[in-house]
Image (cartoon, rainbow, N blue to C red; front, side, top):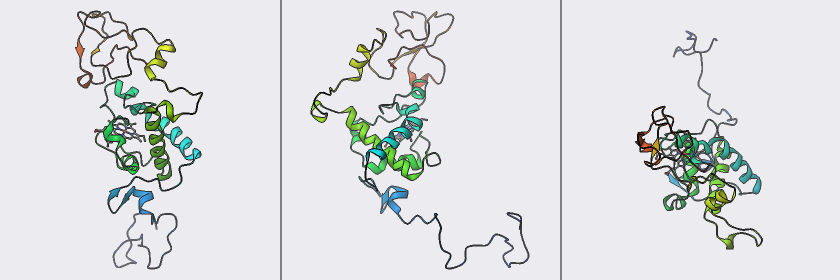
Length: 223
Ligand code: HEC
């Protein structure tokens, strides 16, 4: 039969038939509820459904950098490039609320989306979603690391200190969302990348980023 075509052969008029009793499932029977939903009895859990090996973390890092960094940034502070251009600030994985969330919460968010964030179930197979969740835990550790957490000879450094040492421009401030944004227009005469202050932009339209939409803005940042 041509797909979707009706037939008079069966009493219900459908040419596509339901599976007969006793059909053996191949690939689509998701018996492992936690692996596919991140839930046990409707509740999120703090466990990875397979061992967290280095290979899993590396896969998670690679997938995270592809799919999550545009909004959440490489360190997961929620200040990715898309957010800098006016998208709703994405969650910061290092705030106390998110540090306290169980591991499968991340899996659940990737699977179902969360508020303004779309879901990533098409782009990431379940095993990859778990790998990304595991990597987020590693990121959380790394961004809250103390000297005691690393082998001797390795030094824990603040991101801003690194930026300073690597010779970022002098206007580069801490890695935070700008509290003001100046629109570069011929009238303001501000070059893209210049700092947004009232002093250097007396005639500029200065707006809070949450109102700034996606218009081009001239703001200096450390990245
Ligand atoms: C297009 C931008 C965008 C991308 C890409 C994105 N997110 Fe988000 N994410 C957001 C936004 C915006 C929020 C805050 C949503 C809200 O509060 O409405 C968020 C929130 C979250 C939260 C916090 C949920 C909570 O409980 O507060 C998690 C966890 C998260 N994202 C994980 C991810 C992961 C993992 C990826 C990659 C697979 C990803 N996000 C990709 C925009 C994005």
